[in-house]
Image (tube, rainbow, N blue to C red; front, top):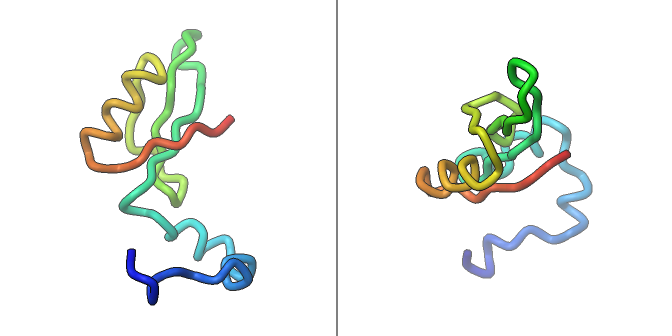
Length: 76
């Protein structure tokens, strides 16, 4: 990231929910614990909330995300 791409903190506070959803859409995937058929699993979501996958555990989910050149972020 070059200096002219750095967004001032005040500008970040003015982003709409839709802007936040697009922020990092191709760089970040969110991991969220979930129940799948009564078993604890991990759901993988794009920054806009779209479910893009699932895995049996955090390690497998994070590995899948990294394999697709994205950064995993755990939410709960």
